[in-house]
Picture 1 (cartoon, rainbow, N blue to C red):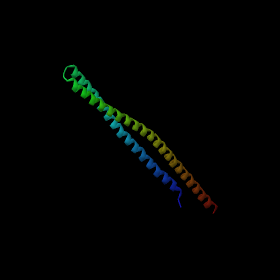
Picture 2: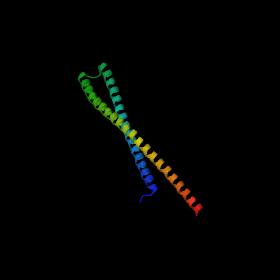
Picture 3: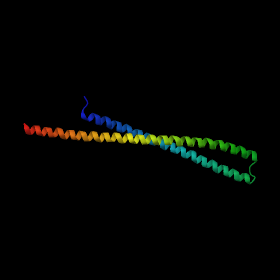
Picture 4: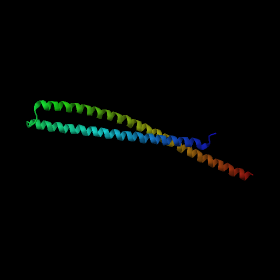
Length: 138
């Protein structure tokens, strides 16, 4: 038979699982943020490289055909990085929604633990009061 503390122990266990879930989601968000920042850094680097090549071309330092090939390759890489960044942004937004839900679930469980503890305290006081009354009546 389950004792009065069994529910509290079960809920406390669920709180631990919920906290672990929150931490896991936060870690995943951090990893995705780092990947997004890396993609953005690479995009910035490509923009700087393109500007430098355009400046060099303007000075007659690059043959037109080579410059066109460079721009085509840079455009493909930029497109790929932009796509990656946008995908990461979408995943981060999804995870942030999941994090909000996970926090809400954690708060509900913590509230249940609090209710369970208060119920246990009231029950123990009631039992103690009944014992004192029964001793006084005997």
